[in-house]
Length: 192
Image (tube, rainbow, N blue to C red; front, side, top):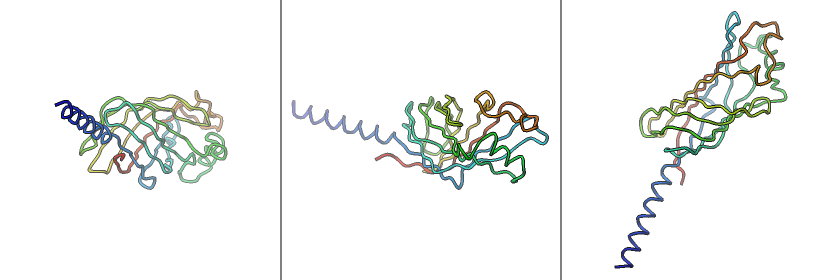
């Protein structure tokens, strides 16, 4: 009877470990299909553009709170290539010295449904701009269909408060913050 009970205990522990392992997922972000849009109010017309995402991946447990990995954003803007764009890249973003903007998620609240559906979570992590890390919490909407996944998020970055050059120094009347919209598209794989 003791041997039977021990065997049953071992099987239950192994079954539980298999379930826990199945909870871990990796979101592989496809840079070609992902995009970061920005806009700065106060300019006429509104200053808008995009950043590109580099190869990125985020690992998480569906029930939280652990999350890791990184989202790498290229600091070069993609606008019309006009003189304002060149000045923003050179004088505000200083892309020649700080080529990447990095988001490293640390934890999240909420539950992720990676079957077919939508999930809303709050992701907390560090956003590194100009080599300085800032803690942020970002609402994220996840939409999954099979192993395909899209994450959408919006945040406001107080770029002047964070030490970047104020656009007014470029003779551009603008708000001291930038609205950022992220659309990350990729696929999910379970951790083995």
